[in-house]
Length: 224
Image (cartoon, rainbow, N blue to C red; front, side, top):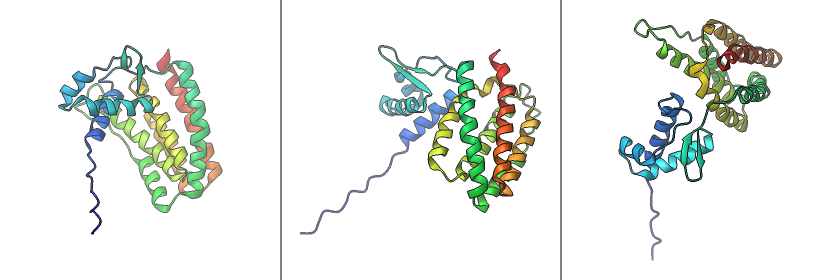
């Protein structure tokens, strides 16, 4: 008797789509920090059953973007306090300086080129964007992509995943950070990228440390 044929299951993307949608709503502050999450209302709005919404919220809780409280349910995580922000940058200085050093040592030629190309990218304001919101969002995306590329190039998947979770909390705050010195940020990115592309670990680590230290100084006034 022939063995039964294996059942081939098709992986549904519905849960991923709901997760990505809710994550974007939180990071862009359509769902505000501290807001209570109404599962049934979200399910109706997204035209899905409550099950994928609950599954997405469980993943977002693991990311630190929502919190679950007894008798209350899910709420969007609050913004970091000034002390928490400082602690986060202390950790970034440890991890991202190491990532830059390892990227300079280990990165493939393709990764080095990608990092250099991202650092050279210029985000210009648009004429039909008077409040600068679209430019702000584009600059935020560019900045996150630059740091993510370096984490990938470090060759350490655990470090990359840790930084990805860490950057989520930073991203929640980006709407409030001043970007008047975006040109300075770009120059700092280029120094980091040049050291990585040239394979100079000491210079890459020092350039990243200088960049993060200055970024922290630029962003702290948002807490005043």
